[in-house]
Image (tube, rainbow, N blue to C red; front, side, top):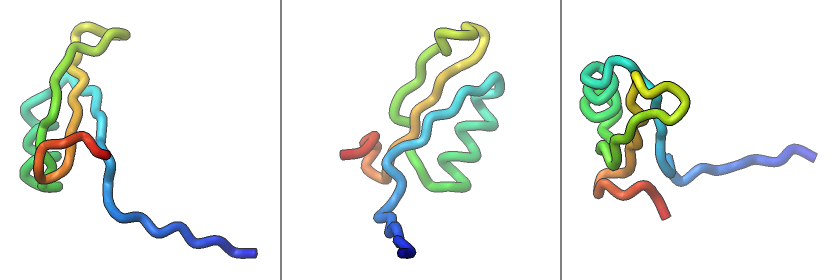
Amino acid sequence: MKMTLKLKGIHHVSAITGTAVGNVDFYTKTLGMRLVKKTVNQDDTSVYHLFYGDERGEPGH
């Protein structure tokens, strides 16, 4: 039996990056998402852990 999964949209995206400016530009300007939260990565404190959400700036429901 073949099952089909229909997606209604992206819940959230999380990105770990050492170049935050380029990362934010890509996710906000290219993909149209909003930066929801910025933290420092706990595994490597030299990089940011960035969270992106929907057009209202919400991480999802």
